[in-house]
Amino acid sequence: MAFKPRIESKELKILRILNTRMELTADEKKHYFNLKKGYEGEVQFDLLTEQLQNKCYILNDLLLKAGNTSFQNDTVILFQETIHLFEVKNYEYDLIFKTNRLESFSGKEYQNPLDQLNRNTLLLRQLLQNMGYNIPIKGYVIFINPEFTLYQSPPNEPIIHPTQLKKFMKKLNSQPSKLSNKHKLLAEKLVSLHQVESTYTVLPTYSFERMRKGLTCEICNSFEVSISVSGGKMSCNDCGSEEEVESAILRCVEEIKLLFPDKKITTNCVFEWCGGAVSKKKINRLLTKKFKRMGQGKYSYYVSE
Image 1 (cartoon, rainbow, N blue to C red):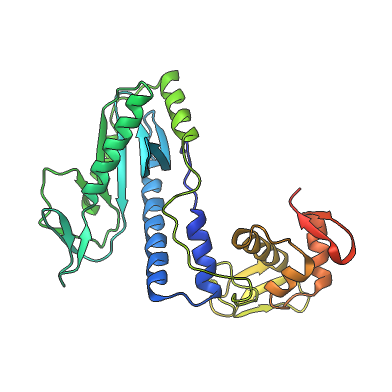
Image 2 (image 1 turned 30 degrees about the vertical axis):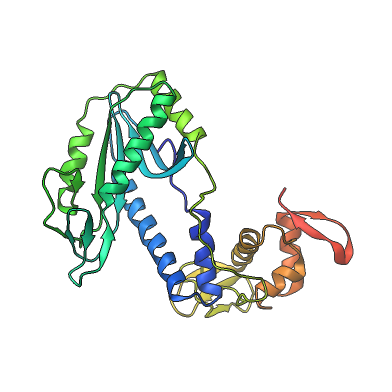
């Protein structure tokens, strides 16, 4: 199990809701899908690192700061003698390696991930030195998607291709490693330095009024859902998945809290967000059961216990 597990960023969670409930611009959609694809690739790499049997501390998704510079690290693994730093890429389309960039066959240019890796390695080394640690750092770019090919890739660069992943993880797993209390203290210190809020977050302008209202499928985000006669189950007409109606209502509450942290959770507010698909009586009963009620009558609202 990872010492620091990976969780979806607040930005990705918000963009997923916005993509479902409002019309994003082409650039906003592109940004959302790039974030989503990147996260999915990182999770795939997590499935590999979780299989490591030797002693190590796995720190996922560390946002750190060296001096006044923030830097995002996809995966950091602490072994006995070295720290391994990974930049994970989930490209599907084939690319060509150039001296200072990657390029598609149509000529579109992409940033060379080695530049990001080298920058992160430098900043992590500076941070560790300032903390009194002098531990060697080995950095790698991981191309995780099995359908991806990087043409003209130089063999002397720390690039791990999809076809090399199995062999690379086996080599990583065979690395002798004994951890002491100082390794745990370092892992704890790095986690404590993790910045929850990223300065790189980019969100569209949105408002409660602009959002499309209604219950959505938890699997495919479709609004095409049906509630059973008894009112206890909700099924998706698109993907066929089923969910408890109460669970769907609570997801709506979490969406409101995430998008509008200053907005009070009231029965009317949740009723509107659900598109009137569930009675106010049912919503009120659920809110009373799951949250703490504040105030009285029409001025009452609900907060987490």
